[in-house]
Length: 107
Image (cartoon, rainbow, N blue to C red; front, side, top):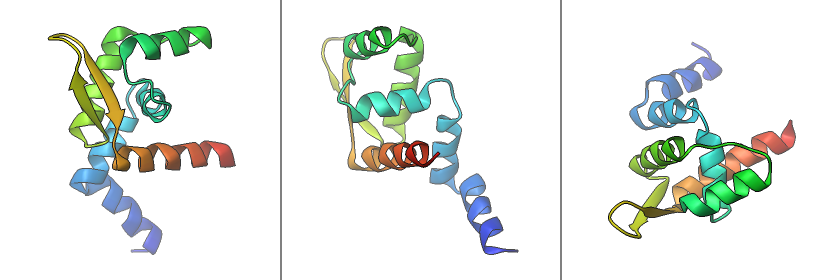
C-alpha cells in the first residue's frame, strides 16, 4: 500500500476523520463552517449575511449542520432562549475552516 493509499484509508475508516468527512459532504456544511469563522453563528446573522450576498440557507439546514458541527467538537453553543442557540467556533473548528479556506484560495 502506498503512502497516499494509507492516508486515504485513514480518512475513510478513522472514526474522527471519517465523521468530519461525512459532515463536510452534507449540504451547506462548508458554508456553516465559514459562517462560524466569520463570527456569524446566530441564525439571524447567518441568514442576513447569506441573503445580502445572494445565497440561500434554510433555517432547518443551518440548525442541522450546526448541531453536527458542534457534535464533532468544531463549534460550541450557548443558549439564547429555550429554542435558540448562538454557535461559536472552537480551535479545532477554526483549524478545519482555515484549511478549507486555504484549499479554495489555491484553486
